[in-house]
Image (cartoon, rainbow, N blue to C red):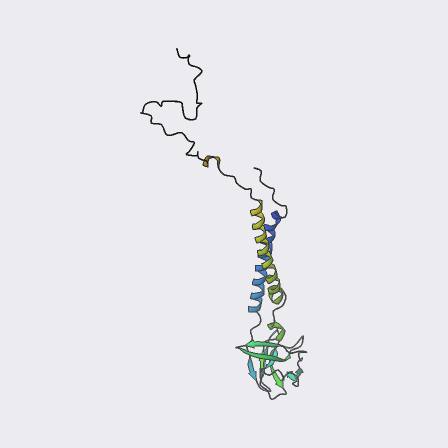
Length: 214
């Protein structure tokens, strides 16, 4: 029996499944690590005139209230900070903090006095955009990973099905056949007398090879 030819598409399913699965896992790892390695959200409560440390990444002013941003102006060393165009929040210790202001591009660094014209409690913390992972080390990586990984597993399942369909059907082993006990000759004792009469399965009737009776 000749085995059927494997479909040409089945030959590329395994490499495609491996590629998609590995790529999906790598992107998922990048997305998760990017979310974990983002800027730390250490909040320091400040009052008007307190000096805060501003690093190369910048600084943002935060509040527990979403309404603080609307009517608050903050200055850092007499330079007005930028106000976010929309609400931007991070979660620290189970609480949400809303960004009130952030340092502009080319801001000075060092220990500088911070003043915000609000009665709400404000906090000096990490630069807002630095807390949100972007690109493959963020939401994009997580999204692509969640798409590619199931596709890779689906291709692997299709490859298994294609392999099973291409396997030839095996017939029964001829050596496994046995004689029907109704037609098989009885076992012969090697030490017993020779059998009498015609052999089992031989011709029956008159013997024409013998001389006629007198």
